[in-house]
Image 1 (cartoon, rainbow, N blue to C red):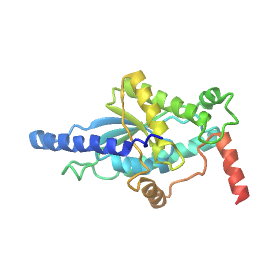
Image 2 (cartoon, rainbow, N blue to C red):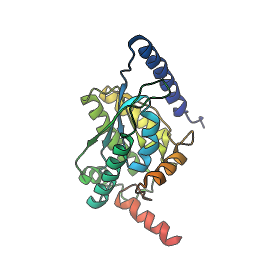
Image 3 (cartoon, rainbow, N blue to C red):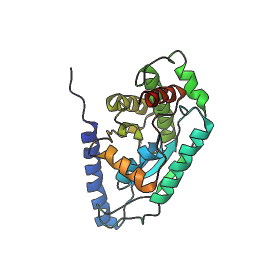
Image 4 (cartoon, rainbow, N blue to C red):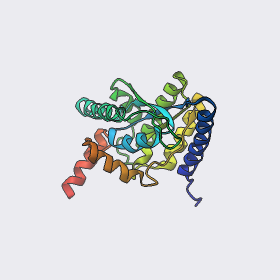
Length: 233
């Protein structure tokens, strides 16, 4: 079996290059023109650490496209929490002061709730276990739309918060993201956000900001499995 690729190391190298570039810009111009990142977010808790971490390096726009969330009320509740958290982060004063004391503003791009998009790609895969082919198709759906939006908006990079979850396969997500980026002609930012204490920090931030957390991804299939887990417990 081949060793797993270290996508967090890839990200560290890109961020180190940006540190060098921003330091040069400060020295030459007295200001920074940050790279632009379109960040697909599945929910506020998962985005919490990602935004705190990446806003030192990018002007981020959060793309909220999650047709896997079947129920309208659940979709709107998660979207509202995402917006509330972004507004709270944007109250932090903007940088730059030094390469290690800077934050850039965060925007949000909302998408219509279209559960039919997910149901179409899930057809025939309803009985797949969590993490199986249905999930892979769901990842590709969301990352393909993200890549198209990144290309349309002329972003420098796009990526997703999904790799922060210990239950999500970062190897598969990065492979899908890179493929979608190549198809659309936009750079996918590699990540494994659960590393370097990222997942633990997201739990901490969720508590600090009182973020709504859930124990299923959003689709009816994962909700049913979550209900079964709770019943067993």
